[in-house]
Length: 221
View 1 (tube, rainbow, N blue to C red):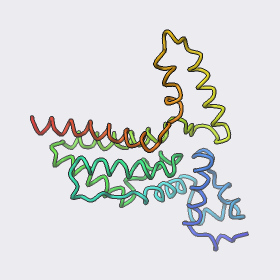
View 2: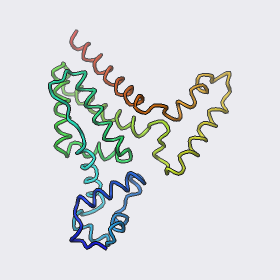
View 3: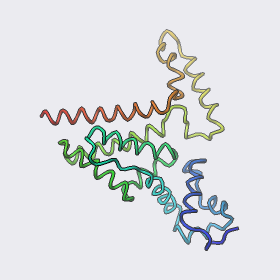
View 4: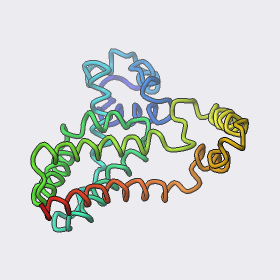
């Protein structure tokens, strides 16, 4: 059994993140973290005032893994690298996606990534409002790609995943073939991602292509 003095914030956050990875955000409680260390919940309050403070620290830990691309990259490559960095940290901890959005502006690396992202857009002719919107789109698209990855079924416990997928397959297979031939043919790919790396690369490429189309339109205006 550990005493409150033998704990430190890093140990607590690491264990909390493990719980989030395994059980989702709703599964994280101060008591579960305390039980993992054999201490009372009060012992954790020496380090974190409440659950919200612990969640913020978990978000900070995930955000700290962001990579800031080389600022010398041209816009298209910078956007792709920035989005890839964002997606990668979320893929490592998909259940913590909302915490990344919540904490990205609280961490230096998150602020640096966003500042350079906005600067690249400004140089390309995007005004403040449009640049800010694109930055928001980037976050929302990254979160959606990860949290809605076909087959991941993050809303369900891992042991229930296969049953959920089978129900979805059965539902699509029951559709009238004369009315929904394309949907039936695409059922497996719609329900479970056959190549996750390709899925993410394509999603990022679509986002970048859209921003670059806007950039070209601004340059021609």
